[in-house]
Amino acid sequence: MLNFDLTDEQEMLRKTIRDFAEKEIKPVRQKLDESETFSIELTQKMGQLGLFGMQVDPKYGGQGLDSLSYCLAVEEIARVDGCQAATVAAENALGIMPIYRWGTEEQKEKYLPKLCSGEQLWGFGLTEPEAGSDAGNSKTRAVLKDGHWVINGAKIFITNAANELTGGVTVQAVTGGDGDQKKEISCIIVEAGTPGFTAREMHHKLTWRSSNTAELYFEDVKVPESNLLGSRGKGFPMMLSTLDSGRLGIAAMGVGGAQGAFEAALEYAKVRQTFGKPICKHQAIAFKLADMAVEIEAARNLLYKACWLKDQEKPFEKHASMAKLFASEVMNRVVNHAVQIYGGYGLMEEYPVAKFFRDQKLLEIGEGSSEVQRIVISRHLGC
Image 1: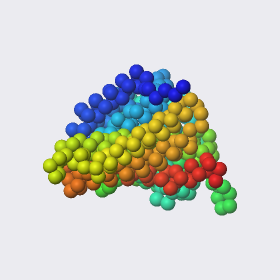
Image 2: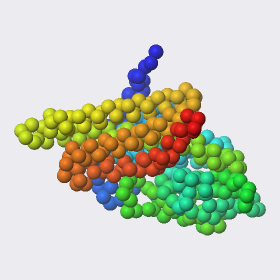
Image 3: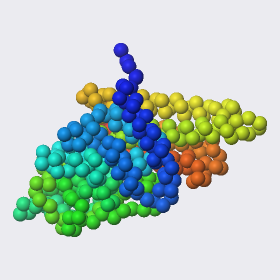
Image 4: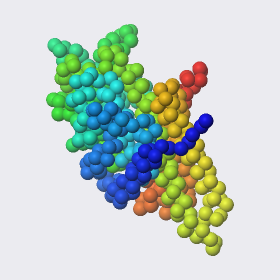
């Protein structure tokens, strides 16, 4: 028997996060966006609320929650501000989970408590100037010499990796294979402040302006051999597995952002009048709102099913890609309708739909573009 009800605990979590987003994030989202400011204060408050390490065992400082509960939290934050949702989603999926899943006990005990509390943030150094969708084309190299990894290379578009809370990054690097040999790719932990490691915050972004995005540079960065995360040569499958789970968070951002834009458009359509009546009474607008509501509901159900599959330890990768693809493109359509409903006012940054419009675009690009999702899905179909 199908049951679409959330548990009492999940309902309470949703309400708690919604109240927090409305009271703490909403009043400052516009100012932070305009000034391109990553808020340390808000991030610490989110940490105090338990929004980091949500799926980590409590013995390491986490909340021990399921995937659906995590996605509910991301959805509720994204309903108000995609930037803060990006901080939470990237930290949980990309920053924390690789260490939690593949770290040694010593690595877990060293890093996870501070990451789960929000005292520190962590980056996932994957994307490079010439290795985005083609993640296996990494040029960053790490050579093992005298018991240390010596790393050289660069990364770009790395979330949470260049602010005063950043404790370090997990770096995907080529650790072997030359010429005709297949590349050996591994993941290595690099702490902030390590000599030769530079993290520069990126500005002038179209989207997620108050999220922290970084360029990373490694010039003869030397770290102990024990900083290897997981097994040598297993970095690429670790990365792929991390992205599979991370796509649930991106899908949740799509559902939440679409919901926020829809609610803003519906509220505006009820008070804005033309030809003597609220514009929501005009069929052209009413039909837009109806289509928005239907697509959001469909995206939410696809996401929740993917979460259920993961929590039941069933294969979920195909559904995660489906949810990420569909939810991000649903938000695209919803925010376009929302701006259209606002008319000229929708083009002004003082109204919320303009920010939703900008913040949506990254969802079709980050953690595997829409094109990559279609490749992933088609492979699961046996193509």
